[in-house]
Image: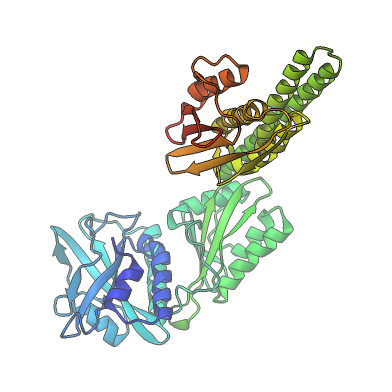
Length: 499
């Protein structure tokens, strides 16, 4: 599906500023659609190369209301219209005013009333908005509907004037309150003339017990908000809208603990002050859940921190026991246990500072490699390096994978090089969307004759096989390199992990 920018570039020669303005219109027009109970179509005149008579228009964007049935269940974007079949489009462009069809038309069995709203930018008409209302569902005029339509009319006039929407400040419409969340209309003096039921509920939750109609909204809102700086900011944004300046959304917490989002828009059709529109949304429960998630996240990170501390204590106890042991075999076994515990502790240390249960393996492996060197034989001159990037993986992958890599590297340090010899071990990760492949290659003396990974009884390789099969669900092979040394090749799946 072509985007608005693609269609404008293909069919028009509008300047960049006009294209940016139409992007703003489309970003804001859900507000118009919901207030009007109508679909909105954005039409632009096609270039001369596309239409010989110059009176053809193409639909480049479409919006449907959330407050009423749509007039266009099908996608209209990309369709064309002749000025002869849709004279209101041409009239709105030429006469620079909102033009309404006298009689509704039937469209796919649905009666539709259409109005054309010129979109002005820089003193020129750059597009036409077609407001199309489904008349198949009878509507009984109510105070809410009358207020909505009145505000929609003012905003449509401002679209024709080129004063709505504005580029500054950024409207932040994707996270702003919407029409159904809560709507308040103010007169030019700042007094409330209409408040929707949801807006009234939001103010009741903030601590205002009575009706809003007739109340000056800015001082009332200031009195309900606990933080004096937030109270002043919200009140100022309402007053700015009354002075003709739009504002970004603002969030504040009332003295009773209710959190509410506000957004204020000026209403100035034809440049004449007509009050302001204030949208509000009660987000108390949303913020409560956010705080609960933050608390849970902090708790998990604290658990990882404590686990890391406990593992370091275990490692320290094992070192202490190693110093008191006279048996070389026991001392070596304890040293290997220290290394394994330290590797796991590093994973938990990384998780204790992570915002989620994911680990940067490159950072972690860079910390593990020196630990392996510390517990290697003092006479060893083997260097361990890394070539490539592991990337970020889930915690359930990180812990067993780090254990596997440390065992393989340690195994190579101990068995691939005779005492007093030097060499190099290189860890090479290769990552795709589905797999993480890792090669641990050494240039040592190679595998002994008749070696079989399945029959190897060393503790390190047994740990590796168990972790690869039960935790990582991957594959492992050990092969002799062509010239000298050994390659351990791991393949670990990154998708379809167990829950």
